[in-house]
Image (cartoon, rainbow, N blue to C red; front, side, top):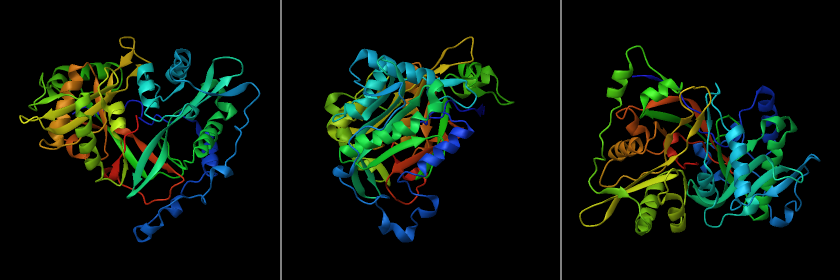
Length: 412
């Protein structure tokens, strides 16, 4: 089997810091209400789950935005405004997550960003930008969306933090910590005191650490762009044979999800996720928003039996990357496993059909985290291990650490 080299680490909520930035970032996080390694809960202390900070009220929250350098101003980005969305897209496309060797950079599309940022109940004030004063020009951005998250049986309103990005030229201005403090202030004003986020770097202190696995769908292209490399016993012909997939899905009754499937998918997914120690509690409106298929954004499928009953569910989303060092290709089309619920059929069968469908839709690689039950399918379906970790963090919540199989949250 080929030796896999991972694409940009799916730690979308960070920029790549240098050593000094890393030290400064740690100094900042040491001031935040995050558990320390020495204070993580042991099994004997399981009753001590709870906030890190002493309880506060909205009246305790700073009512004015944090100060910025004179050249900049705060904006609450209107994601329905095409000009502002173009600004977010440009900022992320030119400055967001790259792999360590600068071969790839995430390329979120504007429709994808709108989908990710606008669930029911989203707040424009949580889409926080730093702009050049007097101009519609973003130099920094961070987003939050409302989410109900369950941690070891405790359900709470949280903010899901994503898309922290600072224009490379302005990183010396230390805008990232100010963006984090400002979005925290705005979330606290709404009486929400906890948050969930992920990052590729280790900060104080992750509650879980996951890893990406990759399944080649277009192995020749992946080698040509430097995403993978052939092992000593693999050439083009053997690679194509090794990763060959059937032309059509194998599960009878598998079809794209439709609006009438929302109640059944909601019921199946919530029943399934309750098996895990950390998971999102989705409403039916959340299911409709996040899972109804949209081309080049989200691909969701259900299995319907001969009696018309919905028995299984699977989904993946599209997150391409710009290819930075190839004369032949400029785009890597990557599918990412989202949520899947086996019922009558096994998770292995669902994943195999997702690979077939992803390949049929022109994707080059299929990526999945080793969370939930995903690890059980990787070996047989020829996934290769990636070379970076994804850390899960809970802001202002003390809990015990988890292994990946206890995690039931996927952040896009």
